[in-house]
Each structure stands twice: as structure tokens, then as C-alpha cells.
Length: 194
Ligand code: HEM
Image (tube, rainbow, N blue to C red; front, top):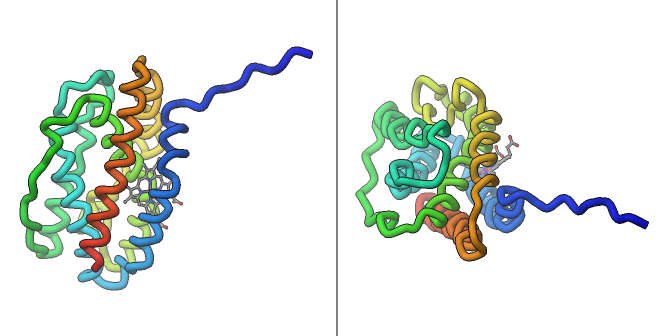
């Protein structure tokens, strides 16, 4: 009997499988901290987001083997977070050392995969933020989707990541980068919501 061809998981599907537990733990950590209880609590989430996006901001400007059409720079969310902090009169968290300058391209792509993916869950967070009088024009700008739609943005990004022709080492580095990014955000969440 002829076996049907085995459809191999895409790189993005493998990344998702490898980071599912980290994501779910982080999701539970954030939601259990009730960041939408009041604006003060939301400020903690905002500071966590600021610290993450400040940490990775340089990656959006790195020369990476991704199609220019992805327009990585336009995907940066740091400026939106800065406006959100300003809207809410929140102080800027202290600047931190950013080790991303020495990061290789494959690891950087793993980190960016996490940042881009986080925009999917942001849809639900944006809805919750409405209860605090916050929206895409005030206080919750960084949670807004792209005008062309979150799903489309994500699909384009993952298609590019899936299409990268990487050797085994670099493929493993993408995965390490994604795991490092989740561990980093978890540390920031634990710190912000302590
Ligand atoms: C910094 C990294 C991330 C953070 C802080 C984060 C946070 C969250 C949170 C808090 C939720 C729950 C929202 C709710 O219950 O209202 C969520 C849901 C979700 N996240 Fe993430 N996430 C991250 C990365 C990712 C990545 C990399 C992906 C994709 C691979 C992803 C995909 C999703 C999806 C699909 C949902 C469910 C959305 C829904 O039910 O509406 N997230 N995320």
C-alpha cells in the first residue's frame, strides 16, 4: 500500500509547538494579575510591554534575510507604547542593557516571531482595555491591529519565516531565540506584576 505523503510541520508550526507551554504560562500569569482591573494595573502591563519592545527595537532595523515587503520597521510597536505611557501619565521605565546588538540573524528572527505573534493575543487585550476607556487612539495604541488586519500581517510574516532556507544550526537558533524571548517576557511579567 502506498503511504500518503507526510506533511511536514512548517517552521512556524514547530516554533508554536516548542513555545506553547511558555506562552500559556505567560498568558495565565498576565491574566491572573488582572491588568484590566484599573488603569494603575494596566500601567504595569504597559511597562512590561515597554521593556520588551525597548529590548527588541534594534532587531527591526537589523539586516535580516526577510523580504523587504514585510516592512519590519513599520511593525515596530515601541512608539505606540511610548504614546500609551504618555496618555496615561506613566513614567518611562529605566533604560536597560540591550544585548540584541550582538545577536545573530537567526536568533533575532526567533525573537521577532514572538513579538509579531504577540499581536494576535493583543486583539483580545484591546477589547478588555475598552472597559478602562482605552482604545487604539488613546492608551491602548500598541494593542491595535494593522489596518490590513492582524491575521494578514501574521500570515505574511510566518510565510517569510517558513520560507527561509536555513541550515540545521540556524534553524535551531530561530527556535532558541523564540524560547529566549518568551523567557525574557516571563521575567518582565514576573517583575512588573510582583
Ligand atoms: C510577548 C509574547 C506574548 C505575550 C505577552 C502574549 C500574551 C497573550 C495573552 C495575555 C493572551 C490571552 C488574551 C486573553 O485571554 O484575553 C494571548 C492569547 C493569544 N496569543 Fe499570545 N502572547 C505572546 C506571544 C504569542 C505568540 C508568539 C503567538 C503566536 C504564535 C501568540 C498567539 C496568541 C493567540 C492566537 C491567542 C488567543 C487570542 C484569542 O483568543 O483571541 N501569542 N497571548
